[in-house]
Image 1 (cartoon, rainbow, N blue to C red):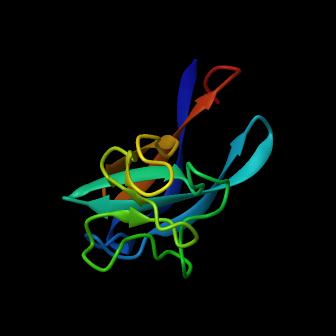
Image 2: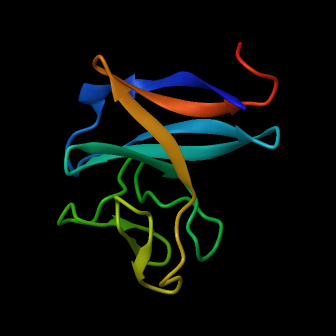
Length: 121
């Protein structure tokens, strides 16, 4: 399958360990919430869904990191996730993972790479 890219945000919108950017993705024709954050200089994107129970992680819009800026945290369950892998390291879903999405940063912008089922568009 070919891939296409969709603009998520300007690269400057993602501060190291700071507020993330929310967006939507289509999965099997259904819109689902997702987010992108910056950690250790790289951009990571995931579905905005706790691995324990299907609730969104952020406690305020775009607030995904704990106070230390080292872990992504589910505001409902307190589950802590590694930003670089999405793996849950503490909480009720320990060992499970967030659903990763492929984000790329280029020329001052962040893009979501999406599979294109019918080839290039």
